Length: 422
Image (tube, rainbow, N blue to C red; front, side):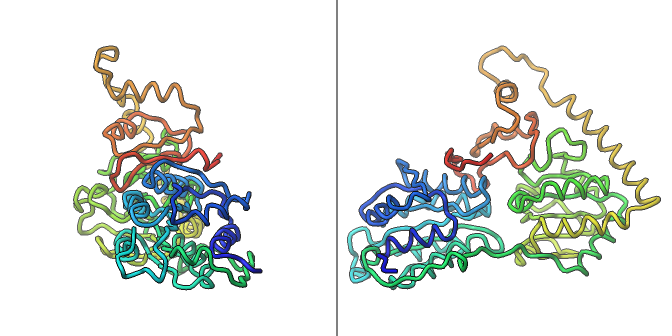
């Protein structure tokens, strides 16, 4: 059908099942905003600053498990999203920024609000594209959306010159062809090797990173930990399992003491490893990650599995269960009982004994009030404040995956109400 460039972008996003776009209106994207008016399937959420739009796109992507699309004008409008993308990138959050640009015939002449957005955004995104012809818009938008969720997820920028939004051409958009990649399954032989190491271990431990939440692998990880009777130690996200679960602990000493460590979806950052001092020589490491670059990057893996965390744990679970018998099952029960006792003792001491009703208000008093006020299914969203340490120590998360916080360090992180996530 005959479509303008603006209409082409909107219809391409619709074919990709985009439901929300976060935007600050500007002259570089007015035709695009007009096109959204005629498409009720996509809600355009307006903000007051482009950085907020990028943070909202990040929060939406994490909560809804789909790309968060951000729409901003050219020049300073696009540049204002950089802090949000710096936050999204280490969190592996698939944010797609569609930014306006000066007209193609003006590029390279220092036109008004003309910035080299591709060069500027390349270090903070997985990919940065600039569209050169109107009839390639469906291809570039589709490629950007797929890139944001393929392999290790992350932010992507698409720069669209102003004149391409008003050009018209015959465009064919077949929704059946606009699909996202399937989950990557692990190599069966590596799964068998990992299962053997875990079952034969005297003291295994699971080191769980953000990839568990990204792939929604909480149930599989919990079942595997219960089969092995081993601790689940989060790298940073504290709600990998319900807080009261006896196998969940923030004691990274249990990882240091383990003879076999199963690391799932983690990058071994300086904070997670106490400046890369966590693992020692002699420990066996099984590392599962969707990004091949992460395997052997910091610690050499005895078994390196490049796969989606949910698929890998789902395949690993029956292999472990088939092997956990007799003495192995008895050892798993003993480990689980010891961990449960230690967890109960730690929980009994988690609240400070100092005065609670004196000024200034203590952080744990705030956490206690939040615990008593919030419903069990509440999402907790936090930026990089020191209150996070008290959240990790005291707050009870009855469900996994409801704690969203800034991995990249920026303040003001947020989760949009438009996400509509139950």
